[in-house]
Image 1 (cartoon, rainbow, N blue to C red):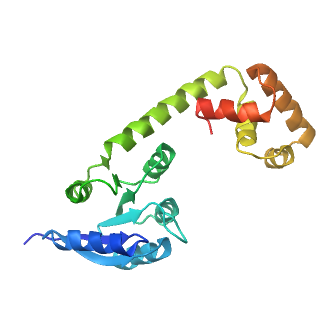
Image 2: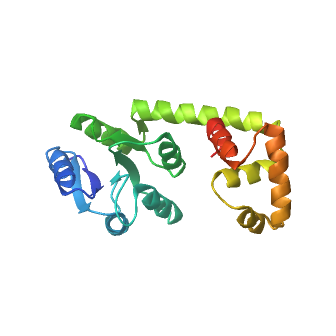
Amino acid sequence: MTVPITVVIADDHPLMRKALGDLLGSERDFTVLAQCQNGDEALTAVRTHTPDILVLDLRMPKKDGISVLKEMKQEALQTRVVLLAAAVESDEVLEASRLGVRGVVLKEMAPRLLVQCLRKVHAGDLWLERHSAAMALETLLRREAGAREISKLLTPREIEIARMAALGQRSKAIGDRMFISEGTVKTHLHNIYEKLHLQNRAELVLYCKEKGIV
């Protein structure tokens, strides 16, 4: 007798949870152990049941999918995760991949593809919805190219300051993090603007986004 693939479902929409539960319940090789409506419940269910796979909604209240993945990694939980999303950004795919997610499925995809994905992930394979994978790869390549370009123009310290400034941190906060004075940060920013031929912080934000370093 084949041992069933055990699954925990985490999605904040009741209709989606029921649909997923009914879908997997109709397959002979799956057993649904729990259905959860938020990230906290998902973590509790994974710790309690140690399922083979967690089907995890990307956007949920209390803890979103990425937060759940971070805690699972910190606790070294062995359950494999398939991320479920209505839409997904390339940054999220990259972050989820770094955190060990084994599959990414869009909710608009045919139900049979989710079942196929879960079987492949259980067998040890990876499953990335094609469009998401292509977007993630494009972002990764753009970041690598941008990092190479900017490293020829700025010092490592200037790159770090430029990134923090582009993320909205003020000069004093940057100085506190880097153990330098606010005045020194402003001097670095002035040099950065000159080297990159920029006028102000707004242009720096656009430059860093274009190069994919934020």
